[in-house]
Length: 377
Image (cartoon, rainbow, N blue to C red; front, side, top):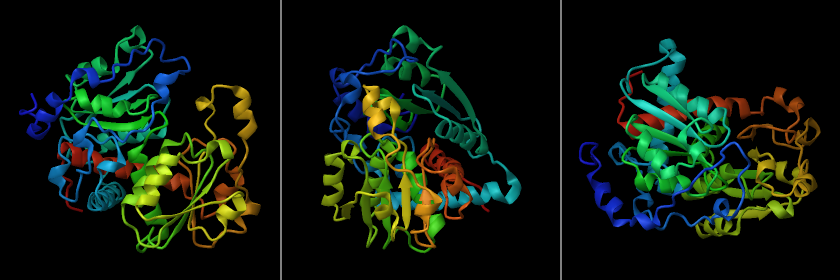
């Protein structure tokens, strides 16, 4: 089966991984709030998945048939390839052609065990813009409701599709899925772990908003729930790994929600300057990007713990008066009250443009992973 899919390089890796190392996760009630030590696995950077080392490069051949579960797979040249292809996808959509047939006959399965609007819809739109088809899997009506393991669900669905986009509440679930799959797995969010496609669209947005060689010589402030925010983890590591000169990261978070020590250590090891600030005003002053995230209620076991930190940082027009004239406010969305709706009219508010960029970046990723050729502009 691997040979038919052109994945000979992964065959030995799959068989070299004992089945005992594959996490099989029974999901007895997907609709319920899931807690417990199973969902609190520590980030281990996928030591048991050797094919997830830096392997996605500027050569499109390195992408074909591969999983995308972590930003650690991306070389700096691979990142630039995605961003450049996203530009082509944007031009394709905006020129009025609407769609093409690059992925005609291909099927994407969207498998979401957690709620999603933007990621799910943008992947579906991206696939359809490229001429492919989509099937969605509702975890509340699938066999996962009966306790079917994630691994068995993946083995089932890969019989009917060419690529699986998976969101799951367990850290490293996408890596576990990739370990048993014979089609590409795309990580659409694994609990509090990573969200690599969001990080890529965030980087694309920074380049679009700031122009030039951004985010080189830029100060990027990350604000809010930096502990649970998978978008933060992936973005910060991606920025550090992409070798941008003069990059500085600032962190503004409640003491209980600071960026994980392992993430900060990894970023420091890559030579990126980091600074912790206390107030939102400090985060905004002189920043080229202010990336705001919500406090994630669903990650708290005790309601009183959430109540103690909600509303810690709220970006208002008054605070924006202290920001640079040329900068961007970003947010992965959904938004609660951490950015006042009054900021929406500010031309520096980039979060809705950021949302649209997600489709272009995901079009590029699908084309790369499935070998689709984009038409000339």
